[in-house]
Image (tube, rainbow, N blue to C red; front, side, top):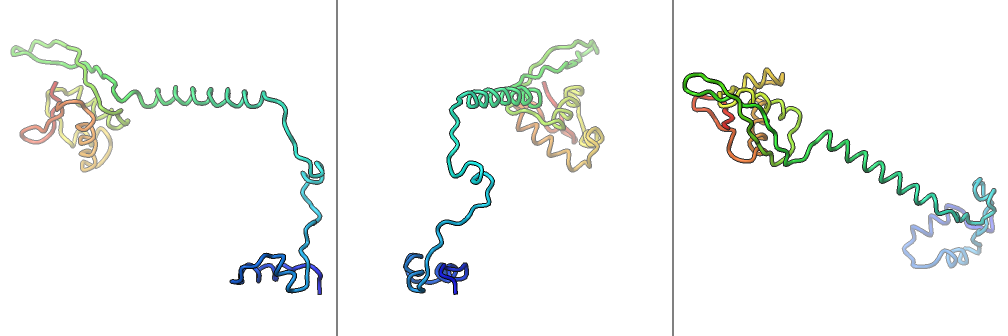
Amino acid sequence: MSEYLSKEEIKQWRSSLEKITLEEFAARLGKKLEHDKPTNDIVDIVLKGKPVISTEDSWQQSKVERLSSIAERALEREKEIAPSPFLAVKPQVKKTAKKSAKKTDEVSIIFKKALTDREQKVFDYFAQNCNQVVYAKDLAALLNLPRDYVYKYIKNLRAKIDGDNLKNADKGGFILAI
């Protein structure tokens, strides 16, 4: 019989409902707690239990500089990917007069939120066919998706375009009225 508590006896102490310390439990069994165990950690062997204190402050400054440069690059990349939600898009719009005299005007459309890639494609198609009926089958062919999926992008565009510019056509389809 060992003079120190075994792992099984320590498990018994943990599972017992009695509120006693481990030392009291060991005393009941006539055993001791083993306090100093030999270590196999390389850090403890090399440092011999002494703490390591760094007196150099330069590592904190370089860490801050690295984080700020990473944050700046991330912000620049985010601006490239998703422009500001209040971006004014200026598509070229063709308006026709009574005698088919064509002229191009520059019109601003303001979005409440930034557009996704597919929403941008749908909007560009609407801008090319401004004040004309655009059908869901045309948009489905443009996005290479089933027709049912296109309505989600139209709904999202309506929510993101400031104003009521995207309307249902009388006999089906949609019109971007500018």
